[in-house]
Image 1: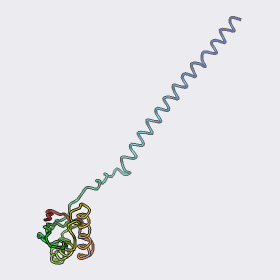
Image 2: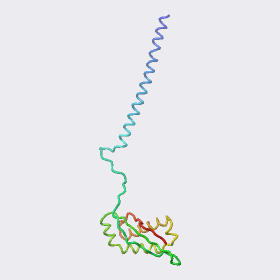
Image 3: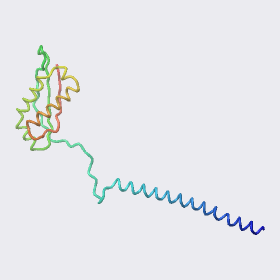
Length: 161
């Protein structure tokens, strides 16, 4: 009977060891799969196929800048006491657009004067008003230069009195 107890204890112990060993192996497998998955994920998402260099993100590229002569105009004020002094610089895409812009200078100046003299003091003084002026001038300049050549307009001086 004592021999049977020893056999039962000997038989019972190896499964305990094998269960513990199975959990250790299972844990290692999970860690290896997780690490391998992470490694594969980082390599796939950070490098494009074919080992081509990644193109740079949208870096701001400044085009060609053309300065219009300063403008001094009366605002649409009933008493005519308000005026606006404005300097504008126009950004275009390339040299060809810059040449076209220089040739169209009188047309563009007319567009600016016509727009500014139709505005009131209240419209000009708000930030929204300045943004509206910028957008309207870009639209007018692009219609005059056909096709769209003007990238942006910068106000380098904006004085209202």
